[in-house]
Length: 96
Image (cartoon, rainbow, N blue to C red; front, side, top):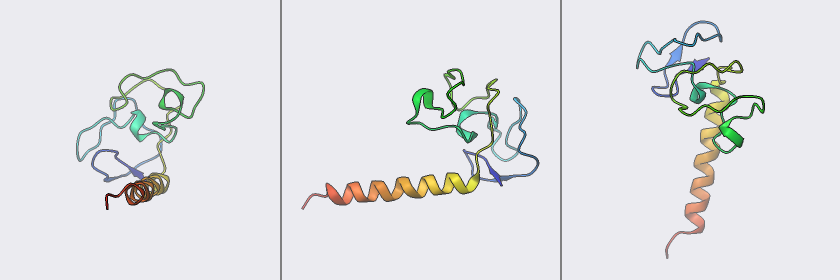
């Protein structure tokens, strides 16, 4: 299932997203890096697709030909991993 990166609501329809499509709930752009399965803030150019061109505003729609809507299960797994890592770091550096 496709999820909006802003409001987290499920989106009906195919995995193909037009460049100018917006979320019906929060009216944010859907064809943007933050909704893409290749987006990775720690990768070079913040994208795991090595052939993709630089996109300056990750929240706005763009012309990227490699856009592929991210998998909601993958997004949830990443968030869980980030929360677990943050909790471990906080426990490690916790003041006594």
